[in-house]
Length: 275
Image 1 (spheres, rainbow, N blue to C red):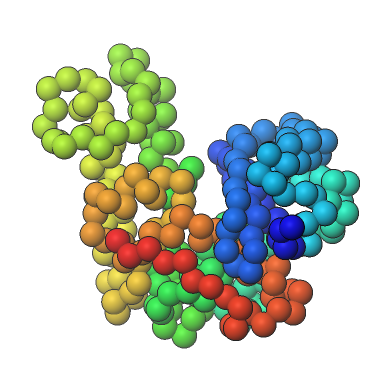
Image 2 (tube, helix red, strand yellow):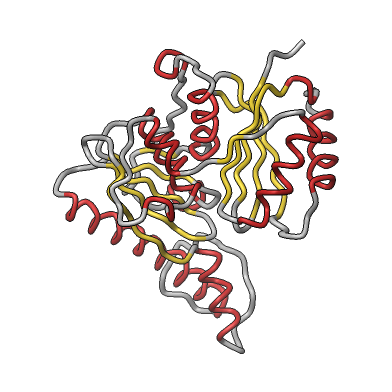
């Protein structure tokens, strides 16, 4: 018999990730393409089927937390939580960071994306300060936490796949292609040339942003990579100290346990992978 688990949901621009966590350890994950027209019944029937295959019953879910950067998905996901799991979910906002003692020191805290909030919360509890969190997804975001543990801002750039799609759409003779790691920058054919420009150009973008951020911060920082493309890019640069593919989902789980009065500092379990 499995113990109780928390269902964490990360609704992003490209995919929605559903993860089950048992005391800060991710025990199962599934993802589905983001579709703003998908209904609560579609989410629920799809998720329950996959959970059943993995040996999880809906009755094992003790609570649900949602972080979304796609407003249209929030209502159907909330409805799914209530209808299929008999749970009223927590929907992440900037006040959850402040509840954990992390001040949001930007001009307009409510505009900070839920994905960035949960990344900051998860990193704050697991890695040395100050920090730069690099989330490599649909967009690439850099988030900075100072030595006092407060969020002071960051930067946003188009994601690698978004850049690749823009190149394909704007240049009539260039083909659509997938991301690859070419060994050489000097290519002798069109597709390898595109791969070289996109991949190594993107590595240069990340390294440049991180270096400039450290310069402005005025002190060395722990640099953490996360997001769907992090495993692809992290091995091609020494700029990252840690690769944590579960950072976002762990941050959502952290919020659930905080609001349910768990002993956060005592129970938290780090999942760290040094580059």
